[in-house]
Image (cartoon, rainbow, N blue to C red; front, side, top):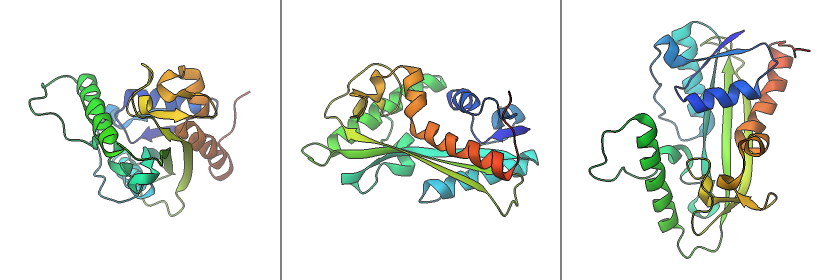
Length: 214
């Protein structure tokens, strides 16, 4: 089955393709079909994931899947939440660089703002959250919905050189490391998106009768 991913993020496409391996699903980024990104006007991950999935399914006239994810910090009432990717304003005079360079600049600004707002806060609990929504078509009355939550705590300074986003600030006690210190295989085995994808695999098998390859 060809399944349109409501994202132009190459890393997300590769990660989900690995997580759905063996299901008989071919993931295609919406950008490859000239589908523009959807608006994300809602206050929750599930609403925005559904919005994006419907947008892609409508444009592609077929099945689609969307992910909406972010970091939720307990002491900040769940912020940065749905605006995790653009929590901070880009620095004045940020160069007109390529997508990856701008992402690194945005990540640094987001982390700096989060550290500032967490200064002196003793409750460091937080979680990475992912919501996956899959639709057979834009008007599908039975969307498949899966959630993944990866709890940890916020560090007081970045730790580790790997990953992206808030990975250097998120410490996972059960692994004894920040997410930025984990190798890709370990991260993909434990992450919020991996947990959501595991749930979604079961839903796709049960509701859409997709089978595992031998």
